[in-house]
Length: 414
Image (cartoon, rainbow, N blue to C red):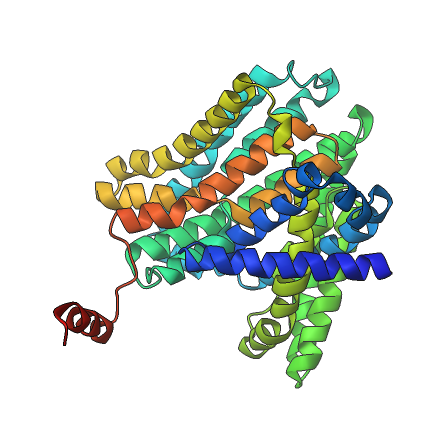
């Protein structure tokens, strides 16, 4: 227990410090927290001070650290599902659906092509070729809905057509990605004989959630006057749903997300979640996940210029796949070229959701350490480039007029 508490102290301290530094540079805090995780792993601390890493993060302590981080992710995905608002789809529905489909299909196909090209390099067994290809395709198709919402907010685009379309597309992408991930995970974890049974289990689970659990939860929470009581019911249901999907051989995160998406929209509960659950997850539990991801990521595996070029090629494919989709859609729909490029930049945000998906890939045996490292660096780069590109294109938060006058006065010596 002492070691776990010490790990929490170190991880949270480093995550807050690096996150604040990146926030001051105009990046989302989550970028700094991801970098903090990488710094604590073999990419930096384990390389500079290997004995310190062995003492602070011994191998036999990692399962406990992973368990805490996974519980944090279950709560996080419940919050993401709870805040998923598909009402954005009602505005510009045709634009949203076409753009969302294009932003998934194009990078997905490029990812499958990439996987087929590198499968011999990573010695993928024949029985896992298609799960591996589908998983790589999915990993290039991800858009991080929570991070994108934060970036849209920070650039004051929430009330604009661009911001509304971006959020709606990301929401639809998220739902699609988690459904595809559930099916791919079921195929990867099952042998050939039981794959159909696993997929059947997923379908039955979804039917029960939609036909039974959703109306029961809605009726039950409607009878509870106390908001804390309603929140407790939803949290228990989310954890139970996560346990069900874990039992089905999918992943607990899918169950938590699905329950949150089906939960009744309740402003009082959402306020309680924002003030009580989310700070605990964001400040304490998610940094543990970043640290665990960092311990799995080793940039020193890129030992040759060829591997570095391969990583850059993966980054280029990921960027082109996402950026080209809105440009293609702009020819059919009423998007200016500038809006289409900005939408592509926003959809290219991968962030935390990508790391969650990549870690699932490692857990189920689909991603070797080298490819995991390459894709992790791709996720970090694509997310970090979003805000600078938006600022370069002129989508910057308007500065306060009083501050501008004060700055002008200082420059004039007044």
